[in-house]
Each structure stands twice: as C-alpha cells, then as structure tokens.
Length: 161
Image (cartoon, rainbow, N blue to C red):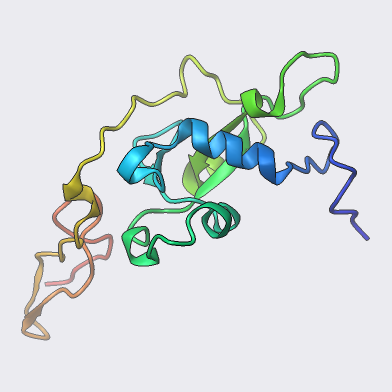
C-alpha cells in the first residue's frame, strides 16, 4: 500500500505538497484582479484554469462556464529530485504548467532559461464564448458544430470533404 501522506516532507519520493504551498504558488503566478482564476503555462503560451482543489478552495463564487474553455493547470517541480541540502523552498521550486507540457517533460527538470514562455496578456476576447469551427461539411449539409481551437478558425478534427 502506498502512503499518500508522508508527514508533509516535500523532498520525499511521494512529493506531498501541502495545500497552503499550492495556494501560494497559484496566487504568485495567476493574472490577478478580474482574471485571478487564470494563469499562464510556465513553458508554453496557453492560458490555464486552476486545478480542482484550488478551484474549490479559492474560487467558489466564480462560475465554471467562465473557466471551462481553458485547459487545467498542474503543479510541477522545476527540479525533480531536490536534494535536502539545497536551500530552495517548495514555493520557489513549483510552477504551474499544462498537462501537455508536463507529459512532454517527463522526469526532466525544467530549464528556466530555455523552457520558459513569454508572459501572455489576457483580454475579454479570450473569455467570450468560443468561436465555432468554420468548416462546411457537405455530406451532412451543415457547418461543423465543434468549438474552434484557441487562436484558430477550426477545430482539431479532420474534416473529410
């Protein structure tokens, strides 16, 4: 049986991260103000919504439909196997990234110089209802009903004409 709670020691193999540390990391990396429920991915140019635990604790009053068009953020250690002698606090070793970047990086450390993305400015245009894909499907005599991908005019599906 795996012991999920290991006494709160951050540098152990299970890497239990206390919720107050996660909240501090979220507050330091989110957009703040009107868009405090969104944050940029540390390694790519996606805008992310909070993980479920953060959403439930910090954003109870914000409707989910405002967030649902954005992928979910995950917490990731910059240095994967942090040596106990390193003077690095958990808040300084954690970043928020998207699931794709987390899978791409695997067990590698994040190189702050090369893996860091530019800061993405956010506007009301990004929060509005997503545009629909503008591909016309002749077989069914209608337009595609899927939402267009972020900053794009079509969805991720293959359209056969």
